[in-house]
Amino acid sequence: MLNFINSLACIPALWPSTWLLDTHGLRPGILCAALGTVAAGLLRWLSFLAPTPAGKVGMLGVGSFSAGLFGPFALEASTKAAAHWFSGNGRLTANAVMSIGAPLGVAAGQFLGPLIVNEDPNNIDLFNFVIFAFTVFCFGGAFLVFNNPSHPPSASASQEKVKYGEGWRQIIWNRHFWIAVTVGGTAIATPSTMSTFSSNYLKPYGYSEDLAGNLGMTLFGGGIASAIVLSRVLDYTKAHITVMKVLAFTLLIGVVLFYVACVHLNAVWLLYCGCVVIGMGAIPNLAITLELCVESTFPIAEATSTGILYLFSQIFTVVMIALSNALIDSDGKPWKSLVMLITFNGITCVAAALYNTPNRRIELEKKKVNEL
Image (cartoon, rainbow, N blue to C red; front, side, top):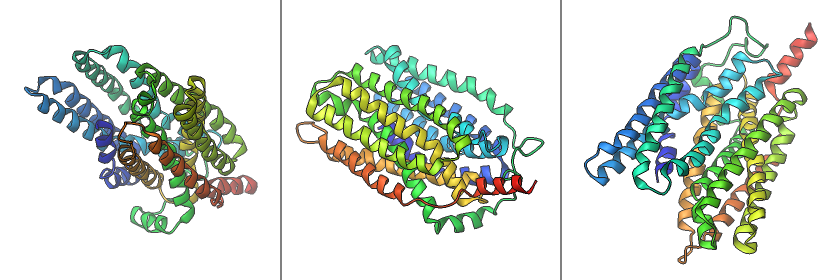
């Protein structure tokens, strides 16, 4: 439920977060994100002071909503930071490293949560304190962020951007942008939904809670490693579009493997294989589609396209979570929920195959190099 609340909160954050980043720059956006995240962590930790269980749940809900409200200010900054501070041969790598912060946080939570709580509900307050302490530690780093370097690292970084309102009008009619949003949104929503429902998927078929946590770490661990490797390769090959299509199909294969292993074969090794493939298909494609959203809409400012992708990823997540709940059988078996995820990803593969537009920033930078 708290994950659901967090996803819902991202929706009203779209306009203020993109406006602040695209009109005032990185620094105020990151400072706003850091301050809001600290406040959200504090609210969650102070829930232990609530006099009633209902009051505690309410404070946890408000804290989760606040985290979701301020999270986009940081999430949407990744493409802007990559574009303004890195050249074309390092932009995707920088974006990948920044964008994997969210899945890395999920993986850390899945690892640390069971260790700290240790099946004792009284330890949940300690876990919330650890989260709050970490947000305070990270808050200081926000003051080290600045809008721009003294010299633009690329020709595209020095290009004047379209005004904020005009950028929105242009994006609405850009079909290739919406394809990239669909692919990227599904790449975020699928592992998010599977992380939320990991126990619900596995327990009805006799698997343990510990296995659910281990599979989650495997998914995010494999995805993060492949994201870093692929981003370095693509920064030099510029094969973003081809790899985006391949990864969309890879994600579909991973979900199918997970479904077959969980529902039909009772094979733990195949569950691990499925989670590795899901991670490899989803997490690297987040950074790639973030870059393609900017490439297909350039010279629109980066946070606008990034914010829309993250907005739709949250909408997809909310829809997938709601459908997963609705599709669980009366005996608790979730096989229909997994079929729904397969269907979602199948549609996304078809959409990805239709993406075919020039990478505008990359073409501009090649042109400038040829003119020298």
